Length: 242
Image (cartoon, rainbow, N blue to C red; front, side):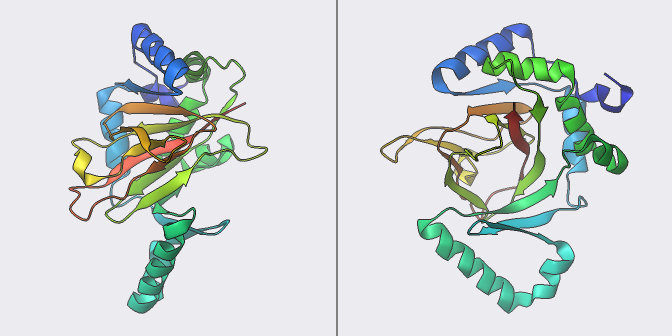
């Protein structure tokens, strides 16, 4: 590893990784806690504060829109209200999401050029040591690539049910590196797992410095963040790919 991402080396114990792998094998989902040094997780969270170049991300059918702060300001109150109504209409019966994102390139040279902490994290997640952790957790030795983005869920944000199975993407599992301290279950923003009957088989609450994994394909959602949520739900999300 290089100095560029030394601070993002995995620090979870071998025993904790083994336990998480056993859970993943039986439940196709697992949580691994305390995966980064606390000071590294803190620094990453601070870097993703309000000054980060967030965009509002939402879909219209298969089309995905990233609306930066300038564009959101240019829309005006009436058009923003109409946009929100359209989002809620589609969410009623179809696949819909709305949250803030900070994209990270899959190209290492582009990540190196921008060099935000989240870029350095993705470099680390693609290093040999992290790839071996992911291979151990999923029991999939063919994992070769980790992609990702930063996400921020504010009150009113959500992600309806889907299974992440996109042809040609070679996704083994999805991951969520949660960077949200002090989150209350009542605030929403839960990673929910859906069974065949439409019930929630189980759900995971955001937790600071915790890695959540779920096998692809698997139906899941992120529940609506309540208007009284005390702060943003921040995480790094992406897929482990062959």
